Length: 303
Ligand SMILES: [Zn+2]
Image 1 (cartoon, rainbow, N blue to C red):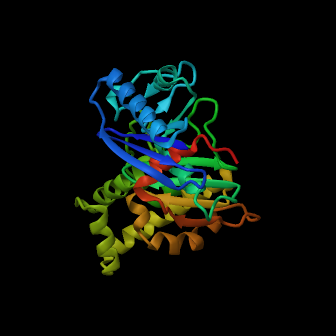
Image 2 (image 1 turned 90 degrees about the vertical axis):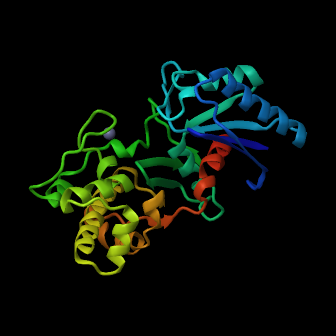
Image 3 (image 1 turned 135 degrees about the vertical axis):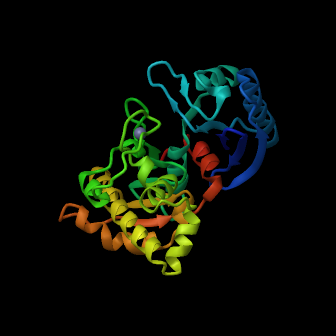
């Protein structure tokens, strides 16, 4: 059995998956505020409970909105206070006496999609989340690429390219990013960025869904705004695809439900690629909210 934990700010989701990667158990428990010992206990108890239920010793993977620092194994996270600054992986390993894999939730999302039945044979799968933030995860031959510092795939913190700045025009907003830099694509192309840009240019606060509805109604301001956004998205995709050259790109997060993206990217992206490159397939994520727990469990699968 492959066990996965999706550790979030308010709840922990557990999932157990069999050899066919089908889910055999699900359990959700609240995340214990900032009580680290309690967090370790909860995880260890769930592992013991399902070991007993399935008469096995399952492998354990954890997905968390944060990054494990490469040099000392402490977790950098703002959303899960209980795990903040703690050596979660090592401490759980000591408690349950087996290896534990840990990775960030965007990488788990990408891994979950990469192990979908239809994508299992693809070599390079790029997961992109257009949600509150702009997240990314790179999966090569069924394994997450974490890099030297565990920051591979943190694509939201690449700065906007020059052609996107030109597209934004003279009145381009320079948004500060949570990473303390300016101009990260996270603040322009995520669902939140989509709304911030709309407000900046049109002086009106609107939810992404309202902007999209107005776009489908043919409203002029929304149509112009969406056209600009999609062009900038294509510019950034062009850069990412040139660097990573994925076979398939899977989109998740709220904005990934905007179907027009899938119609427009194949038309708009090629002009931002090298002339010898063909654009990858761009598809919508299939596993939705269960991506985190699936990906966490699949951290322990090798092709
Ligand atoms: Zn940033």
